[in-house]
Image (cartoon, rainbow, N blue to C red; front, side):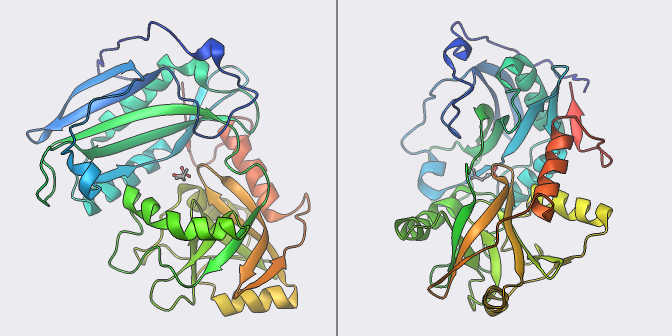
Length: 355
Ligand code: COI
């Protein structure tokens, strides 16, 4: 990708690269050398810069700390055999970022600022992009309020930043989930579709209860009737029943519009695999588990990629899913997505930017 914005760069005096163990990456713990920063003041984005990753000064009255005007994205970059860096569907992340911004009364971020900041940061830190299969550079763009004012109103100033982390798998093994029918993640008219900090904060307590009971994550149900499966904590979910893939629709404003979800739907269409975007009810799920016709269940997300589900608790009863065979849809889709992301198979939908 050709870049045209002249972004000033201050390079780190002490790279952490040589002290990083790329064979032992814990998700989100290691942060690369540099970060991209842009500030929004007086109605415009300015002062774009790349600087060493470092703590920053925040005023105790910072509005984001008090009222949560804070949004983020998650995306990943890969390296191919020739050493080129590949970014997967960055334009889709930029669009979703601005949808979150609109919902949270935050300013729109121009595509140029998002993409050029991203590409120039990744180009500078390209040695941080892992080469091993399964590993990648997780990219975290985010924006938060910068006004120092504790009245409740949209901030007038904001900061946009990107930093990156070399990562391995988010889930190192198949996951166990519990259908949640007491707590609510999201409700129509709420902020469920926005990638905003508060959604994750509100999910922590119920998720912790599930973890204490031995599950990795929750399967959230709709906030009104708790009868329809919506999504999992860090991913969208898909079920395969009698050859048919079923995943919740994302037009209710309650569910994150997953980019991995969208990619799986597109590939399923390309392959002619039947896939329905409709709500699976909790009773349908339980009936399918009782009848032994739930063939596969998996989460889709940027961090988690394709996460196989091995155990589901519904209405207090645990069900163990059959082992996924090599030919399972979720295994084939993971292999195809990985092939595209590492530049090993054709990219028919132009999802990759390479540099
Ligand atoms: C992602 O999949 O990128 C996410 O944002 C999930 C999580 C790590 C918060």
